[in-house]
Amino acid sequence: MAGPLLPVFAYLWAGPNTFIAVWWAVLHAIVGIGFTPRNNQVRFRRVDGVLEVSNGLIAQHLRAMPTSGTVRKPAGAAALTLGHVVFGVDPAALDRTRRHERVHVSQYERWGPFFVPAYLFACAVAWRRGHHPYLDSRFEREAFAAEGHAVRTINRRPTPVVWGRRSAALIAALLLAALCWFAFSLATEAGNTPPPSFETWRWTVTAVVFCSLLPLMVVAEA
Image 1 (spheres, rainbow, N blue to C red):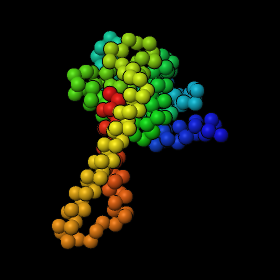
Image 2: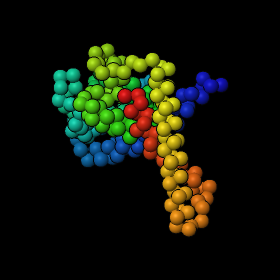
Image 3: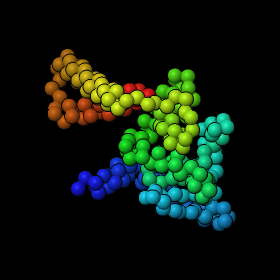
């Protein structure tokens, strides 16, 4: 039973990002109506369960993205993945970058709605450590390695080490939530206010764990 359910869960988990991507594709299709049809007609393809989209307006937006000016990655982007949708400057670019972008699809399936903030945070971590914020982020290292590129900073830690660091990040997030709750309780006692309700406790813990676990997980695996 678990086998057939796993792909369904992966689509649902990445669903919020895919939903945004579909609306972005629809917007480009509507806006492109008033332009040259040959250049701006949106092309849709479904390849291995992933929707691939390209047209002239999308190409303009992708080429304007600041990625890198190196030989390995020219300035601008050839493709961009959002959930189970991949945008490309043209069909040839989608074919050329398919292996790279499929890695990002699998990353969306693992991280779900957390992927975009985790990706940005990983770029910030790489930059803070003196590396390239795009090429040396942990998510791009994984994608470039799948293409066969020799990535200098690729992380190949043993699985027990990775899961040990993840567990430590989770424990640290829970301890931080408990500390925040303790401080919140002291503040209410000092102000002679009623003790916080269970609902307040639940949302406080959820917010603190959500905000602290994401950076701790990325740092643990960087």
